[in-house]
Image 1: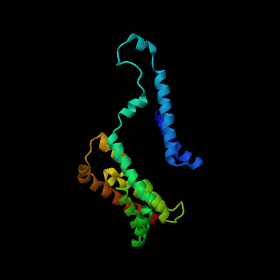
Image 2: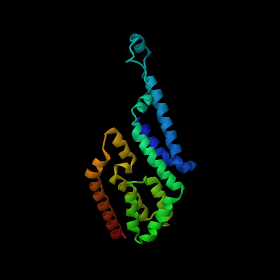
Image 3: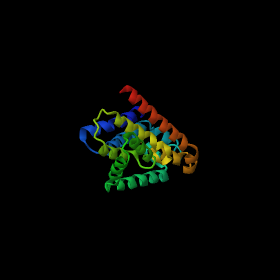
Length: 209
């Protein structure tokens, strides 16, 4: 299951490159394959003799691993995350993200500061549409260090708030982490790490070129 899950994750960008379909299609296909394999594998471990010998005992029997996994989902966290994604998608569909990104680029002439501002924004807005907006802002070549900096800022800046990443939202539900507690105790440490890493990236880039 571990190898199949890792392979399914790697399969998503390959599927996107070959078919040019949205990434979520590849994700759903991978999830379906993993779910089917889990059902088939669990049924091969199911012994009918155990059920016959323990007739009347509901504790022993076949239970779908997919149903068991779904029953452990933190629905409030999922709905919260879906709400954020829907709000960001609405801003993206209206073009407000691209307009804001272009306005930011016009106000701040320094590209490094603009990219770091995008990283700060990813603490509130999901990094996927934020990076999409940055793709419309810059015309640098694919191998430019700018895109490395954008990837670092969008990925790391989201940790400054617990709602800035899917993992943080899931952790809120599973570990019962309070938003204000994270803001008081973790956010400032994540901010220091983000700024320190950005400065180190710029120094290494300037020394290299």
